[in-house]
Length: 414
Image 1 (tube, rainbow, N blue to C red):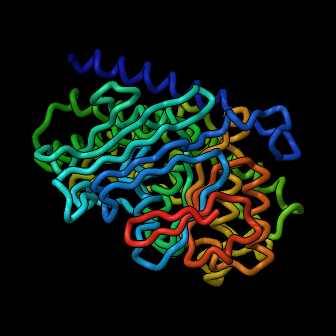
Image 2: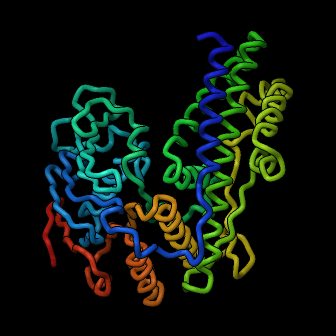
Image 3: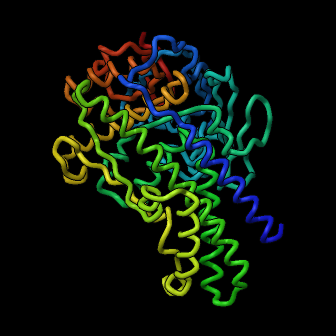
């Protein structure tokens, strides 16, 4: 591909993505599921099978669309099961583990996760896994019997959000963790988003390598920077739109829930520019800055400006200070508030197709008021929520399918 055709292709893809973002609907108020939405429209798993995945050598489940609760002692495999479900999306799942870590120690060197996913597009048979002998850094996906489906296409077949104990330090951790969290929120609304993040990262690595070598064709470097500007602007625009829509939901729920309201703010050069300029102008300005910053970036051996440097600031709206300054308990319920509002937003944008919700060890750390409200909101949104806990008594007020896990074996407690 010539530099010119490469740039034209990038422009077309970027423009189409921005058009898709602008078509997202502003939610109508009050924010609540419409009674006209059918239960069959939600995303839910009707069958699940794990083979040689973590501590599950052979696990099968047949389910209704109701929420699912998994109880059992620590180490029983509850989080492993949620991780398997999260791998029905692109990426490395809710733990971010290497693919080689997922195989069962007593297995045959391969692992598979298969599910029958029900949703507005009908029933989808989705499988993913690693075959013995293949590259340990990769996994394959199959959809409706078709082999070797690109992983990014899984984002179109299901919507999913999750919250795990490892995310409790999100507000205290590095900006990269918050960017990854934000990009998962965006991906649930824009299935193409991950492709653009990956394309931007690839172009940025190419630019960094050329600058480090010190000898390069300025015209070719200009093409790479044009690609970075287009992909980067599309990424920033998608993030801005998602945050604006999510903030609408959070604000509308202020008087309807004991969960605190979060105020969200994006901190980044492109995001700031988009607040006052058309996307095409932001793209051109970023391309020119990349050209001007070549000497500085070459000395730093990295690109110092772009969407890969952005951060998500979260404030406790009632207390008017940053979430990282809140107590551990307040940070926890702020996160829950964000995930619940995001689930509502997906349901609205998808005309009732509420996402799968994975909550790992969430209910046990809530007081009775917040726990009851959590169950009520999940029921109101209409999701198939997957929740874990030590004892089933924590879920007595929750209408759910309850299973006990013991060393990878399931027992139905209903």
